[in-house]
Image 1 (cartoon, rainbow, N blue to C red):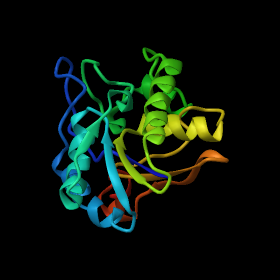
Image 2 (cartoon, helix red, strand yellow; image 1 turned 60 degrees about the horizontal axis):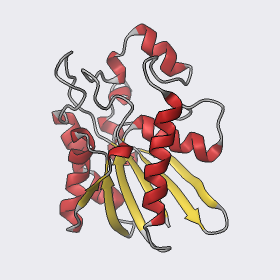
Image 3 (tube, rainbow, N blue to C red; image 1 turned 180 degrees about the vertical axis):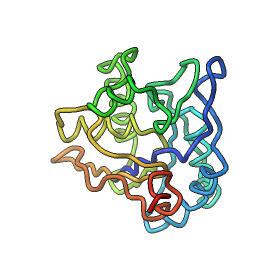
Image 4 (cartoon, helix red, strand yellow; image 1 turned 90 degrees about the vertical axis):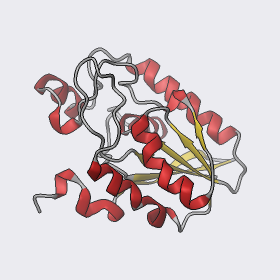
Length: 199
């Protein structure tokens, strides 16, 4: 089976006390609108999402295009789930940015528990999917990294760049289990990514 791990599109920032579950920004809405065309070459049979709005809103255009419901799995939420606010990586504090750049989650996150939660969610998606199915999972950069790290046994948890609306493909087989097929496909949103606006 095939898993398409799609990072959410660009969200709004939320301030302290507003929660860590903001809506997509106008730019993020435009990124999400490109996903149906970007994913149409895949025979998607099922959609699963983190419960956070930025992931659900990213998946909605695909759900509308395919006429499929979006299943919600709380285990696929980001490590900031339930925190007091959301800060896009571009606005992270210097301390948190140093940790993230060194491949670690922010200091108040239980990294092992986060990885175990994510892996349990993905394992259940795989276990309930048919051998020939393709499942699109709308989630978060930390979740994608947790899976790439687990499957590839990388030294650092945050081992790959995952852009907004980027697509990472995992393949599962009965003999080899999960394997990483591709990471962070962004051709469909290249011109809409904050880090590329300077080029």
